Image (cartoon, rainbow over all chains, first blue to last red; front, side, top):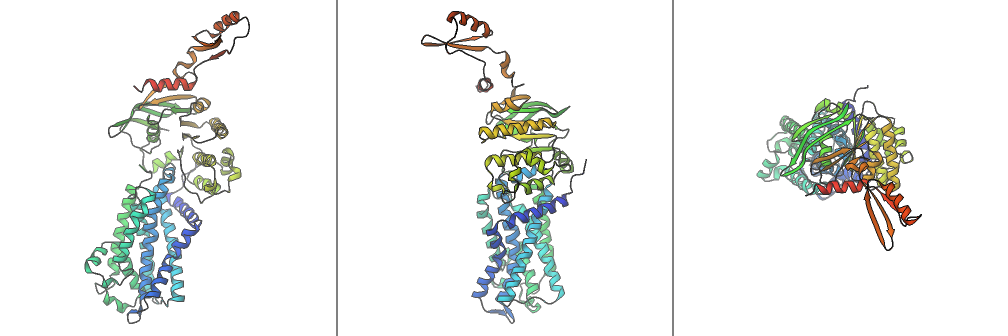
Length: 264
Length: 283
């Protein structure tokens, strides 16, 4: 008798299957991957001003776009597609096999990470070519960028899986999830300069990961002189790391304990 | 040795007592059919055995495991069973072979993918996208995914609902092949001819209780029940219930001096018996 494949091994297999399925839905591939670029094109064309010496709105906006891309791609898409998978009986069928829940979650995390990397590459490409976005030159900024993307992607995946138990059906999922994401984007300084928002909005946003991801991304894409204009007069990257980690742990615990495989 | 052993199984949803004390014992290699009308407790019972639902009371042992088992032991257990659910319409963007191949990776000793596709009659569709399959082909894919792990025990939940008669016959042949491999099968169905064609034993469940367990031929005293002889006498159809249909026919032959007009000799069908059984317990 051979041994049952390990959870990690099956997670990687799930990941490649998820990518294959995603890649075959052409409309959603184009829309998902290019969405941040489209937004950058719109906002970059409308707001031509500089918000500080040497900082264009496009530059500011790239930071927000990558942060909110992490939320759209992980949290929003999973909280909508998992209830749909549940509706058609796909999750219940998986539940009846020896594949453990952790493998299913790993598969989703791989899909989200890969999708994110492609989105970022496209955003960088278009940003450099058409909107004069400048890339950081210091290695330390790229290290910050790498952990922000990894931690942000993992956190967003875990919270998306956890939130997938809220919508009762796949059909209603989008109506429940999308407004939450849009409100968080406005409150977290994705579309507007964060410091220009009312302070109650800032304080509300500070509970959730998106504000911290956006701020962290600003520390990568804006000159360090801009840190003085943040609410706390600094980038607060240490705090960002801690808050994202807490959300990751909470999301994972909740997802593992409460995940719903079946409609009822 | 029994593969499925259930004693005193109970489950309620609020005030509704869905399962009120079910006992079952199913031996290795048996094809066992669970028959019952909608709402009888069939699905609840089976889903408890499959580990999808919790129970309120009773003992359940499936291949020596309690379906409540969690963690690695649950994986060991699921590695040995196959489940074909009522409907799954996911993974439309994958091909048949990709899906079966992927699922085969979940098990320690999967069957050969091509062999399984051939067994369910999907070898010509192996490259087709799942969303382009017909209902019957999808169902056969469901079965392929249920048997890919070479299960010792297979659960089949209303496997031929929505099939045309030809597809049903083909499906029955497939299940009979599995019998040859020693797989134990628990089948739920509301088609009586399906239970009759496939099952070694049948349990009738109604109002959360098993009313009877026996072979399809003997269910409800069918084998020993009275035969009905009917014939035309002038303008009238006459019917006589009898334990000795041959002697009735002999008498009639003498009476009509040869051919008896419109003669039929019938015994109650499984359906007649079944309807009497579930009707009798409704009140």
